[in-house]
Length: 399
Image (cartoon, rainbow, N blue to C red; front, side, top):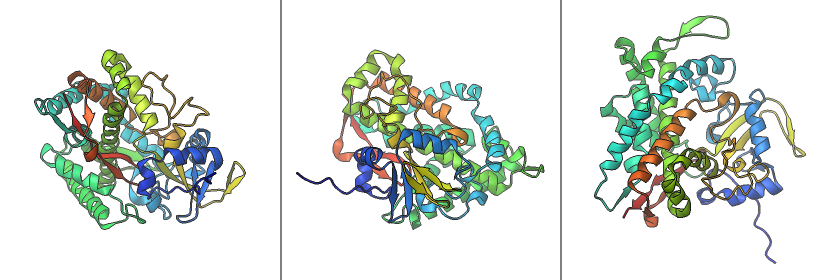
């Protein structure tokens, strides 16, 4: 009898990242509080533990980083809401949320559908195209760029910068020259754009952020600085581009590999909103989130000390059979479950409603034009990062 392989996982291992679900299942079953000695982090893999950590934002904080290779030093002053904790996070989140109200988001439906039609119809008559490069990455970039206020002529260059920001290299993750150069280029661009919007305001988020007033923890009313506004624009532009692009790439791959599920959506488009939730649960675009402990915590007989790096494996939690029956089965008819793919608690993704809307419309418009497609498997390329998971290329062949 062959002994099982040693239990090992880390987010920088590209071979493991190609299919992390078997090792995550083993973590859930045998080591729900996993410690990686090489990179000095703990990992929680069960739904209940991940959900509880998201809810306990006082113990599992974000101000010391949410991406493994960045964790340690205090990042709360970097101007990125994702690296903030209460009370700074509370006031700034309330400010940004104004751009993503249900009414405002719903009002984008016609524009999203128009962009989908333009992108997909431009491929008409071809035997195939790259679903990510030609559609999946383009749609969210255009939508969020319009909201943020990035001019059309600059959008493609900045989308490429965002792709480069998530570039990783073995052992160092996103701390590499390509990623750092892209971060500098993107932030420099957005800072200049903020300064332009302050001089000549427009009907966009950067202009609104630049003019808004906030009350800090001392009760002082002030406006966001240029750097703070640019950092907000960076976060919203990057997250809004990257997450939905990964979602759509995953959809193209999964619906090709599960043609029976695709056929159900073609026959009954009313299932598409449910399918979006199943895609998010089954293959979350951001399956790993980092937190830093402020006090010792004990889980399953394991003591996690204060000042420890903890990775929350939402990708594992979404397949936990304790809360999701037969979690490794992809089923677009599944009753939607409270998955954690947009986070939970105070850091729940502010753009979740927009991402869901884009995903639904993109699938509706795709399936209307292409009820069937095959993958050019040799050209499918997975993009590896320590926190975001998806594809950089998904060439498809259409009848």
